[in-house]
Structures are given as C-alpha cells and as structure tokens.
Image (cartoon, rainbow, N blue to C red; front, side, top):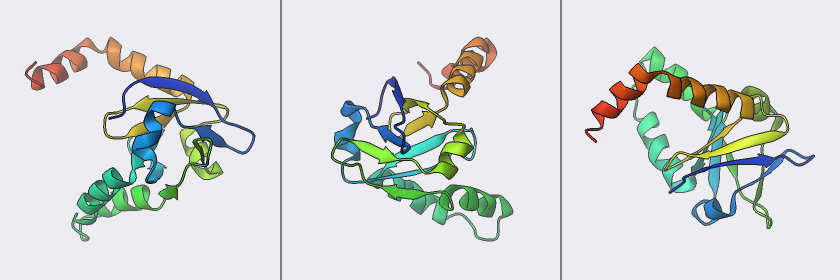
Length: 144
C-alpha cells in the first residue's frame, strides 16, 4: 500500500530516489507512464500494472475513446528497475510532460504512486479541498 506525500530532488541524470517505505513493494519491478487525466506521471508496481493493462487491453478496439486512451497510456509506458540506491531514471519526455524539473512530489495513491511537479500538485490539492461541493458529494458516495 502506498500512502503519504514526499518531496524528492532529481539528481543531475534525472534519477528519482524512491521513498524507502515504498521500495519493497516496487522491488520486483515497476512501470511509469503519463497520466492521461492530469499532468503527472503514474508509477505502478509490476503486478498492478499487469492487472490494469489487462483491463485496458480488453477495451473494444473499435471504440475511438478506448483507442485514444490506449495510445496515451501504453505509448509512454516504460519498465523500470531501481538501482542499488533505490533510484529510478525518469526519461526527459516523461519529465517534460509532467513539468518535472528538479523537485518531485511522490504521492502514494494506495495501489500506485503519482509523481508531480510541486506547484501543480499544490494547485491540484488546494483546488480539490476548496471545492466543498465536490468533496462533500464524493464522500457521500462512500457511505462513511
């Protein structure tokens, strides 16, 4: 389970140090891709990626929305293995998509991780928390 929010700095080669508490769950390998909904990157453990990829692959080939989603999702995906120091290399194309330059917010999303430009992350979180109608309506669907 991936929980919490961390800010890390990329090194000169574009490598990101994965938070220590996430490393065991990502050890067998991971996949990074762009988020087709927000300007951030999605980092999945291999097993979660395979589960999601199976669902996306089962979408109808003749549906233009499914095709567009597959293109955005799979074409940017990259298999990653952490080095001995728990770092992964984020390629330039993905960093540019997410607006990641130096610092990265690593945000746990339970079964996966989002990687954000800190300013965009702050804007997204503040915006969501200030929208009381959205927040209240959403929580009411959870029957808490």
